[in-house]
Length: 401
Image 1 (cartoon, rainbow, N blue to C red):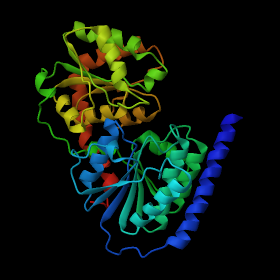
Image 2 (image 1 turned 90 degrees about the vertical axis):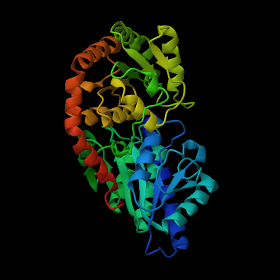
Image 3 (image 1 turned 120 degrees about the vertical axis):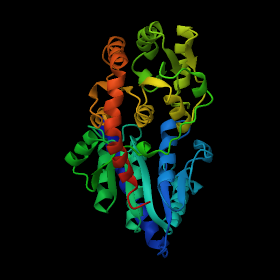
Image 4 (image 1 turned 120 degrees about the horizontal axis):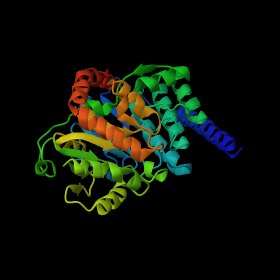
């Protein structure tokens, strides 16, 4: 009953905001530039997430013209690794605020639309309401406004949950009715979106497959031995439901017994999901000279450099798996929302997705043994499919480059 009431409340908020938006549009219409070259990007939350950083870098690095990046705070991203022409637009209340502060930022957003050739939302896993239904609905409403104002409007490379939040689903459906295009990043999500009768759908791959990576070694990457390294990430998000210290320890002992060097890599470092705290516990428990802890958030390019030395990867965060695949390195990825299975369907390697909530210790050792023995064949399989996946990823940017 409470869940149903919450759904109704979010739907009511959505319709109320849409009405307010329409009223503001009626009195705020300006003359849209006929020679716009700006691209507006509503970024992912950022604030200590390598995946969000990589998606931002991929977008700015793959489009022509100036990208106006909407963020909550300038400190949510590291800007000196972003290659391309961009402007940072800080609208702290556009997605997560309310009342006068939100209306103020919405009016600023409208002014950006007057000179925007396109408006894009980083979709990732934040459109279906699994994490924050209100923010998912608002993203759909904002991109719908962009379409109404005549901009080419799209939601970039995102997953779609098997059971999306009803209000998030309804809002996205309304947006597609106005002409918003949806770019689903895996075949399973694409099929789900079609069953949900979402319009304007295209099958692509995640935008990070188009990341302009480089490999130069250095820092940690220069200190490890090539091909005898396993990168390991433990997700604080997954750890809320299953003890990953206990679940990972037997697998890590297995790797150490086989003379691997283990590099523990945090993918998210922020108050509501700190991988580093969890990895520190693992590092202390193992107490082994062949286990190295990275105690900061690396950039996507630094991760790619480190991956040139890795035989394979074990991760609870999907974008670390994508960065690995982009470099031809097999990753075992803990699958929690159905999005990972679709990713590996594109590479013909379904065994690399692992449900962490069923016999994790046993299953993880079995999966790691499989990858240890078959790493070469898995690399060949990944490499054979990679160019096609990268091409699908590029489709996110068609018409913008």
